[in-house]
Image (cartoon, rainbow, N blue to C red; front, side, top):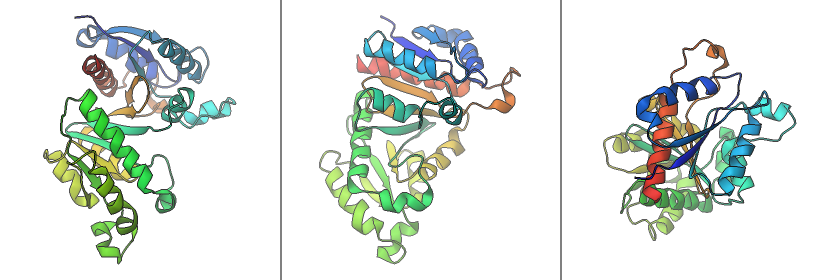
Length: 278
């Protein structure tokens, strides 16, 4: 079997990225999965490594990108406007529809909104955003995870699904109409389901993925069950991109105590997705 080629960017050199990259590739079980091309950063922020990786991926010389963590604030202070890997990679590839899916244990969670203040969620939540997240999730489950008829659970925004509008109208006005449209291409979609119920059902195999309305609604349950092995997948890009679900961890950088588990899982998932895509 021909091995896929995967690029790994080692992240912020002051963080744990270089360490977890090294530790992951020292594992023979990881090293044999693919041909790996590691890009070490030359600047203090690690942004240059991401730029180099994109140039290689655009030439189709690799099928996947695994990114070790960088610090958004540090990159912005260097003069480069940077919202995060997800937004940057979407911009430079001209990707209009994209989403963040977190995978860990039995859970796969796609967020409709990402790094947005909680008080703004209601104002920016739209049918289109929910439908786009569901389309990307449905496509990924079929293409990369071999699920022919995905069962997608869709979260409510308010407690108790808004109680028919008594404690919030978003379910009636936005989420339910969106789900009706989603069922046209994903008949297995169900919802809205209260956030205090849906993840229990997903954990026990009732859903293949969950669509959460906001960041912490989805990531809280996922990190509860897979804090050290969670993986972030960017959906919608022209190439596969995964990353560990943690930050630079400056406080333990250089001490050789960083746990590479999430990086290993990110690498394994990227390779698995490459193989499913061929």
